[in-house]
Image (cartoon, rainbow, N blue to C red; front, side, top):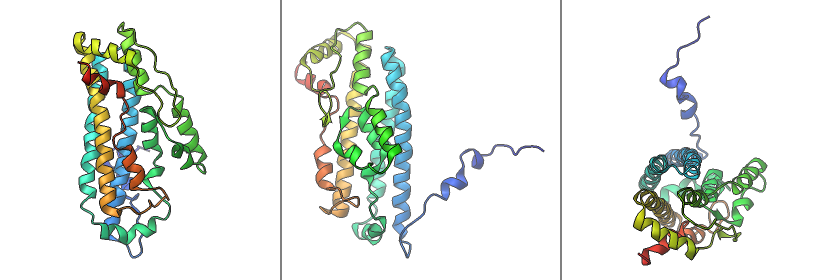
Length: 263
């Protein structure tokens, strides 16, 4: 018996994909479909970013400049797409969202495991990362496993070491917020890099682009939430906008920002 040939529909599992948008509102609210699709799309892009970050860390640790540059540029393009999706979500009015918000129960974007993974690889740690998943053992194990992995900053410092720079290895000293403290010794090396090493300079500036892009996404996200629910508590019991505002200007590569005043 001959097997069916692979088609666009079967390869991409289109039928399964299109069956995943299941509204909870009753009667069904028109904008809930948009809400679901946007957030499912976010999760797909988070998955791709984690995939790319895995390659980026490997290439950095091997001292490979141009494959790292190529990978980082792809990550940055995805970041721009994430920011652009906020424009689509903002076509939904606060009144429209509130028509189905009560049906979301305790579900919340704070429970996105993949976004927490992204933050962890960026060197961030928050108590809520684990608190939000105390009843989800597989998720908790995944996050704790990620915390043992090499961060983007550690991989970048290894990249500089491979290129012969005497940069100190980052020390994980904090348990809340960014785990690394800024280091003036590292900053002195980075100033040298920008003055004498064009290839490494391109990569270091892309790291800044990523840091800025993440801050931009956080800003757009918090303003979208603020214009939608104001100062209300989040659906998962979080502080909502109050918490989000505290993360808006959180730099993940502070040494790369600090050298701006030293050039």
